[in-house]
Length: 70
Image (cartoon, rainbow, N blue to C red; front, side, top):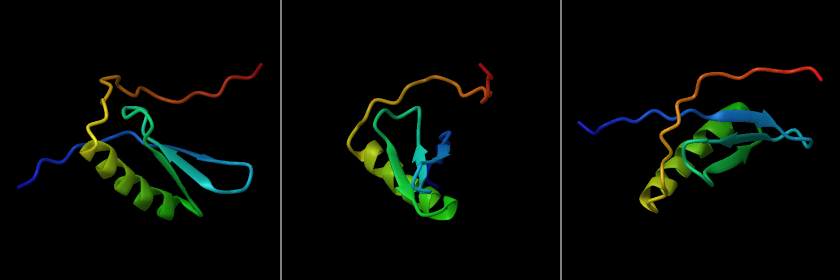
């Protein structure tokens, strides 16, 4: 059985309405989709591609997201 790794994926909607997905643990690993479902499917492909190109994986642990008013 193949080892399964989990990665935190951040999702944001850009000004044109596209969903941008990025993986903070893998520098340069990001993609976009018309909706969340498409963005998540594409980020899985992007992660696999990034891992085959031997990108450096950071060991930071994701602990949360906060909004701050200024």
